[in-house]
Length: 155
Ligand SMILES: [Zn+2]
Image 1 (tube, helix red, strand yellow):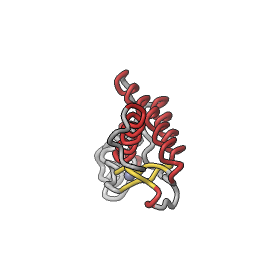
Image 2 (spheres, rainbow, N blue to C red; image 1 turned 30 degrees about the horizontal axis):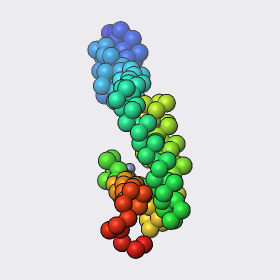
Image 3 (tube, helix red, strand yellow; image 1 turned 180 degrees about the vertical axis):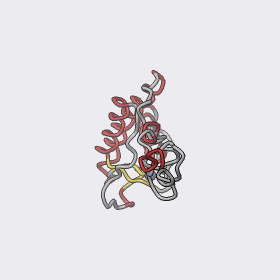
């Protein structure tokens, strides 16, 4: 009558509460399973580099940005406001931040959209479309005044 309790060294398997005598995998279903962290869905090591087309787009954006800043900064525009696809809120980026983001995208293949300007004044930011339209308007004005001034309104 000596082996009635705790036979076969069952205590070695006592990992938590309610563990019985049968051997179990001590990590089975345990949230502390050390292997659980190896397939974290948030892991971004599988990042792919930009394609040539994507790189070209970014380079064109950088070139546009130079034009927009040159045209808009003198009239008080500090940067662009971009509707964020992730949080559906407008983010305000000043010119330097935009340039930094685009260059970061070129070098790393991933955007840094969530570093908007600190405490921005929305009055000083315009959308990318506005900037493009403004640049086109300035271009047209320059072209018209250079080629044809018969019907240009007095400025
Ligand atoms: Zn966002």
